[in-house]
Image (cartoon, rainbow, N blue to C red):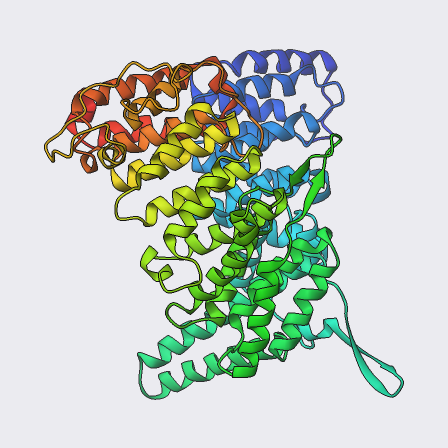
Length: 622
């Protein structure tokens, strides 16, 4: 290792040394393995390395000693063959190995040489690592190499490398750490108002809006939220201190608020125009529209005129038709998740946040949304609604139910809870279109969570949809039933349909043997848990590895029953005799061949099996 590069050594001696070191890589003493790897690293960069890189990669995969793994990582030359192994080492059990992996990635692999998936994976892992030293190494890579060296200090350019539309949370995390570190701040003259341009036509000022790219919109959303949070922190510190210190904090809070006011649109009307312009620009600007919509929570709506403008805009948003596509057979297909307003859960949240800000008084929010639901529900009640009208009405209904704390708050609105259930949700669950059924079942679940006791017709419909529905419908029904079981308890659901007695001391000691393929609509003598448990034994569920693995029955049932076991003390009606039965089924599910493709399920059960025995001696005995 100390031999100079220009030392004259014959090829024969080099070959003997290399052969000897290859053998020593497998030595039983870790320190010898470390030195042999360091010795071989001198030859690993040669075009004809004699298989040294292959030896390193094979050894890395099975090496038990962290110091040896670290040395191998530091010795690997940059190439497509070594990149994946180095990236995998960022989740190594050893802190020093993870830190070494980020160091190598930082110095040997330029930002452009990594795919978007690899960039975002590295940042997600590194910035959330439990080790401060690993987190700092990832931040150094992000700041010194990626931002400064490869992006010239321009954070917008950096965000473009991360595809923030697909990896939004990573983009927000990157902005957050850079703002906290002080590497990014608002530059002089930077403001959202610069996207408003005035053109003089016929002696009148005509305002036009320059559209923002996705990265720019995310930048401004996170920047404004950061300034607002800092101002609030400084204001709180000023309120809890006295004298000069309080004056300093108050001054800093004032500066942050002034900076925020100078960045945001000058009026609510300008804010509305900005969001409308991006909405009108089409689907390509939907992401930017959502980022900008969240800025509304920072504006002042105390003025009656501002409230009127914002309220009118909200009404437009809620009544905005959902986007859809038409397939080759002429069938309409909802764009997005098929259950949320705008086809996007995040968009629905953004709309609700703005609505709560504008309509801040108690009950006003529910009254406004309920009025829109009533208008949209009319053709549904009259059975004249088409597919997209059903979807639109259910999306707004879901928004209402998600943001309502109790069904009582709907009693004085345009549509009563009983009307929501009987005239809208239950009929929607019986529609033929799968997307309408899924949206209806989601709303039924939200409705059931708000009820003091689950209603009979609601539970019957969810059972029926689980038993007879297509896979996507059964998945949504199983998710709803699991949530209601977790919230109300299994006995409450069974009592709703008359399956179990209302005895407080009742215990369910066994699962009824059920073949859900043979159950008919009127067969109500089987409990909800038995029906759900029987879902494990149905062998024709669709095991789909696509997406986030949320929408398949095995994953939902696995997570649900694991939750029931972990929180078993909350469900006294489930006998302890059933715990080993459930546990055995989860073990079987984990080792099923088909489960290998269900990453979310495997991860959930892996954590469950580690955590469950540590909760109590009874769990260990299971």
